[in-house]
Image (cartoon, rainbow, N blue to C red):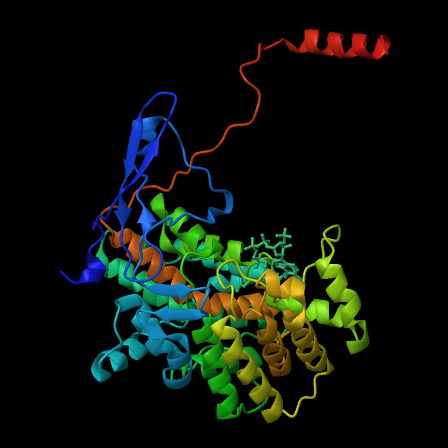
Length: 449
Ligand code: ACO
């Protein structure tokens, strides 16, 4: 067995000792391939009656996984062992999808088959169009994404029995293939243009741009550099181990919910501004800053403990160094702006903001660096996407990560329903009083005041 498959290597266990009762609990350590090993506390409650307490999961590994590795201190991100920089520069999105789903890069023949299976699943059931028409035109496209992806299980009954490997794979392929179509249709619906059907002779990224920006009255031509930048964007967002949305997908899936419902749950979680909604928030923040001369004022606001304002696109739960995706994204954004000859005044503010923040002791001490969202918004804005679509684009790229993590969980023999416990801080047992006596009491309280 390869060393990375060995989940049970034990080394010098820790011992938890209760001085009062004299009871001790030995905590085995499970070795990781890379990064921190973990304390195996699965028997903690059974043997001591205690729970561990870790709101926000800052010290808790919720599962084992061999998909993605992050070293936040060194700014490393690897998928199946491959560095994100290499993948972004040398690979393409569908190859990365194959890698995440299957564990290795495809052979030329497997690559061809995979591309074929994805491109032949890009259309949506025609009746789903009715679902779109039920939304208000000004609905947030992420609301539409949550609704439509959740509804897929009502249309594709033949891929919801995931105990069958074949159905499981069809569900994975359908989700990867259909998510750009769903996203593009959400955009078309919001601008009142006709939906554009996918074209199977286009690449994944080009097809998405085609479905989003082409109109039946005109030819559609796009610079290959733009297509490459879109493809890179999807690669950079493909997976990021156990973040909030991925953990949501796993938790939903652990109860046996169907994969379409699980991905809809992931999309809902991604929507929040502390997660995937940050790229939208970055642009809003830069617009609010408005001019380079206002940067010091906003830096001070971000540092003020009594002000809820934070520098959007800065900081990360895991990266305590430059987010490796941000460096590639910065390059891509510059390239797109150059190709499209866009002179975005917000970029000047962003570059200056980054420069000032990276020299400021508050950001240095707290290890707050730009994350991937800091630069992605520029590229998307230059391409013509409204800010409300930014998180949709993130969701399109991340769907493969979610579904690969879901698949890994379903195929893990130790898969259990996710059921965290709590530290109860509420009332102890209280005597129930009938309503009339509760009312009387409150009237008396009022009279006696
Ligand atoms: N601006 C100013 N101060 C910040 C920022 C920021 N962007 N981020 C963190 N801090 C400060 C906090 O106030 C806190 O200070 P304290 O220790 O004095 O209380 C300290 O740094 C640690 O912050 P936490 O919120 O405890 O760190 P956590 O790991 O929980 O949060 C998060 C990470 C949510 C990403 C946070 O940095 C943030 O809100 N950033 C802005 C939003 C953003 O860019 N999100 C995108 C994340 S990347 C992604 O989803 C792809």
